[in-house]
Length: 306
Ligand code: ADP
Image (cartoon, rainbow, N blue to C red; front, side):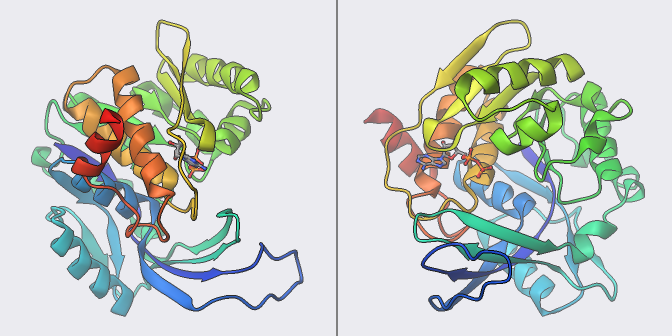
């Protein structure tokens, strides 16, 4: 079983000929809207990749929140331990996608910011099943993530932290002690380590620094290059991404993380789990949108068999 602790958002997306510069207005294509948020994207990614998924999240008390609950039920997510925050708007993201698939995103957190450590404390042990994998991301407050990771570890789970968006507060206190695998992208690896992570060589150094902060495995996603896996006790391995035509990279990292959690929950070694996750991430960039683009288990297996 995979348990995802994270945000549920609603995405409003406009495709533009290129990303706008500060102060600039560009005319683009039609407005696309649909479910998003790093937590929800990863939860749906994990579900499609073949796991039973429990989703710990906070919905807004508005039309967006109600639509998302309905959508998550159809996707087959277990929402027993999620909550709706009274009188709060849901999380919403405004997204611009350029012609080359690059993106620019602003998020109004809404209900996501109300998911508290107390909410984690109030959950029954059943929400943290031994032998399962907890995947957390940072669109919910860091103290809440810290509490979730600690409970997961004490319940006998494997933990994965996708430090997105990057927040240096995860390096305070004992949060990192409860992380088995940290999964930054290059920007996050640089922000958290204070080292550049533009090239693969630089990413290796940044990953080493992060591993030393937490004594955890580090998996740095490298976009079209794939990912870099640094074990707790061994050196780095580069997992190349399959060559695909990228049309929209929104949600690639979420797809990667959801699939990584599934493979770890199936007891694959982290390097094999990273191969599976890379395939899922690469499939996600071949289609527009966040959740609509997420691959099924059959599609991931087919790509890996090629
Ligand atoms: P994020 O979305 O968090 O910035 P990345 O861009 O590093 O994350 O992408 C996550 C994963 O998605 C990569 O490890 C890779 O598997 C896949 N991916 C992303 N961009 C591409 C691309 N242009 N071509 C192929 N795969 C990609």
